[in-house]
Every structure is written in structure tokens, then in C-alpha cells.
View (tube, each protein chain N blue to C red):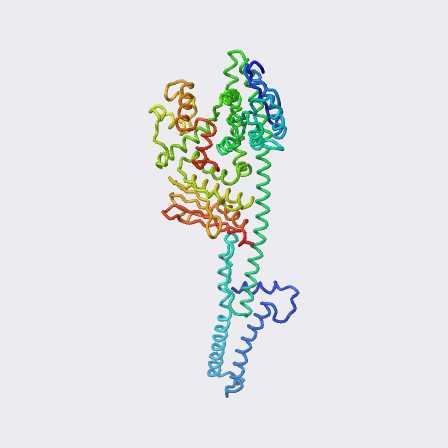
Length: 218
Length: 340
């Protein structure tokens, strides 16, 4: 812990899922699970102990849902970063999670791939968006642009425009990389740049954008 | 028409008030009419010098026949007039559809036939109420069952698959090179199953509606629709809707869902407008597309389901051509205060 490891609180009502997550997280040199909770209320209690840097909350838990716990947690322990773990591939939940104070949203079906990266992004203070959320945001952006809706003129490079289009069509980073004959890493870097240029750099920007775009209620 | 009259006497069981039931009243009226005609015929025989000899003369037969024909014609005319309202009744019986409630015959006068019409109207009231109740129970049971299955899919199968996927990750990382590809494809297979489970659960039950409310649920519907059909949808949801209650929200959601499904399947539309607004007459859900339109197509199970759901919450559903062609589905939920 003193060596700069990120101390993680893990909350999921399914013990086997918790175990699987813990194995993955503990396998990384910079991450360490220091507490586990089986429901939202317990997670909230544990987050107040002061030895947690990051809370990973399942969105659907008994006694107190992940969203409720996140809301309370960001009020009571604002230093604790929050990641939401969810079964729902639905940007409404994603925006709701952002509003509740989470800095990232990880889909369970790709948790084995994304979780570690999401933890690191959260600790760097960057939002972590799952692919579907990026698609939703970009698609909305394009629709607004088509309707000439009060959005600043595009400052994207032609390459970025190309990628925006492919993302909006629902292609994964891997497919985009293959189409454009570039590496997945480059696609991801473009993706991050695009979001930044569109004013969706961090959690608050994203939330603001979503509210303005009517994607979520204020 | 005679069938109605014939069948009717079976109805008023144990009602002993004389003339109190339409059947007895109708009986007395017909009986009276016939009596009148016969008395008139007999009168003619008594008061005129007409006689019938033991051996009937041709002239007498002609007179009798004329008299008989006159009696029959008068009788027929009188009967016809007094039974005419039954025509309207039988037309309504053929037309009546419990999915479009509220259609009734106007009751004119206080006679026996209007009594019949009134009784029929009351029967429709009762049938509609009973049907409403039983379909409410059926839909509630169906929604409950769907919710339970969706939850189990999520909480049991979904979680187990997630656990498998997570454990597999460690295995893949430590596996020898030659096994890794094989394990990866297993991983993707499980990921695919997990996605399917999630999708099935989502179709079964709008979790968004339960968890995040109507506004989010409508947005999610619109997004899903665009993703699945590539049709642009303009969404306008009034942020200050009155409290509708769980049942009405679910009905709204299901009707919007069904309408969008229909549009994606049949309409061939390029633009859809979905709005949920507050109007003087209540909360109005409107889904307008610029597609092919209904064009007299038969109403399938989907639309029937929409009607049943609308009846359930006392809402009014209309389907018709939109303002610029295509189809407009409009659901009006009257204000709670007015509904009582």
C-alpha cells in the first residue's frame, strides 16, 4: 500500500464474481483488493474506513444498489474514486452512473479485458467509457451536427472524422484498426483525442454533454 | 331478427312483475296488435252483411281472401314498425368489439324494445368491465413472470457466466502458447452467451424503467431502435410530466416499444418522431413515422395487445394516418383527477 498500490474496495453480491474480479486485480502489480462487500450498504460502510482509493461497485446489488451507494459515497467520501460494474449495455445506466459520481463504467461481459485499464484510468482522473457509450455519444454528436444544432464546428482531423464515422456505425476498435490498417492502440489514441476535442474530457464534461444533449435528465 | 326475439324469453329468470321484462312487454304488444287486427276483421264480418253460405260461393271466397290479405298487410306493417329498433341492435351486435369500448345504442322512448336496447347496453358495460379486469390480471401475471425470468437470467446465469469469464482470464494468461488460442475462442463464446442472456433479459423486462424511470426508458428505447433499424428518431419527452404511476408507465413503455417494433418491421420509414407531452386532455404519447402507413392492413396480435393495455389504464389509443402520410399512433392518458 505504501508502495503506491491502488487500494480497492470490491462490491458485488455474487461471491464467485467477486472472487474472479479479485484474482484479476490482485494479479496486477499496482492494484490490490483491500476490502470486499456483498451489498451496497456494506460497501458504503467500508468506504468510510479511509484506506480505500477506489471502489468498484456492481450496479445491481441488494439492500442498496450500486448507484445509490455511489451517490452516498461521493458525498461522504469524496476522495474515493468509483467504478461501476454493470451487466447493462445501455448508456442510460452509464450516464446515471456518471451523475452518481462514478468515473467509469465497465461492462461485465468485457470486465476481464477492460477492468484493469478502467482502474488505472480512474486513478489518473480520466473517465473510462465502454465502447457502446462512446458509440452512443458520437452518434448523438453526428446527429446534432447534421441538424446544425448549436455545436462548435468540427475541429477534428480528416482521420479523426473517419474514425468518428466508423465508431458511430458501431465498429469495434479492432475492426476500425483493420479497416484503416493501423494498430488498435492508435485507434484508441484517436478515440481519446476525439472525445477530448468534443469537450468530453472528464466525467463532468461528459455529464454536462449528456444533459445538454438530452440524453439524460439533469 | 326473429332469433333475438325467440331467444330473449330465456333471460328474465324469476322476474314475476307483469310486463316488467322486455319479453312479456313485447309479447303483450304483439298480442295486442294481432288482437286489434282480428277484432277489426271480426267486426267487418259482424257489422257488414257479408255472410258465408254452407256451400261457399266464389264471390264469398274473393271477399274473404281480400279481407285476409288486408288484415295480413296491416298486421305486417304494424309489426314491422314496432320491431324496427331491433335492426340497430343486431347491427351493433355484429359490430361490437370489446377492444374498442364505449360504443352504445341510443335509447329512444320507454317502450319494450328500448328496454331491450338498454339491457343490451348494460350487458356491454358489464362485459367490458369483466374483460378489462381479466386482461388486467393476465397482463399483470405476464409482466410479473417476465420480470422474474429476467431477474433470474441476470442474477443467476449472467453472474455465473461472468464468474466463468473472469476465472478464464487468469487461465488464459498462464496457459502455454499452443493452448492460448483455443482458450481465447472459448472466452469469446462465453462472452457471446453473456451478451445474449443480457439481451433476452432486456427484451423481457425494461430494467431501465424500473431502475431509472420513464424518461431514461424512453431514451433507451429510442437509442435501441436507431441502433437496430438505422432509422433516425427524434425524441421529445417533456421533463415535467405528472406522476403517472407504475402501471401507466409500463403501458406507455410497452406501447411505444410495440409501435417502434412495428415501424422497424413493416413501415419502411426513414424518420420517426416520438413524443411524450402534457396536453390539456392528459399525457399524450405520439409516435409518427413517414412510412407506408396502415393502408387497411389487418390488425395483428401486436396492435391488439396495445389496445388491451390501453384499456387497462383507461387510456385512449388511436392508430391512423400521420399528418404527412405514414402512421400516427396516439395514446392519451387522461388526467388522474378527471378519471376519478
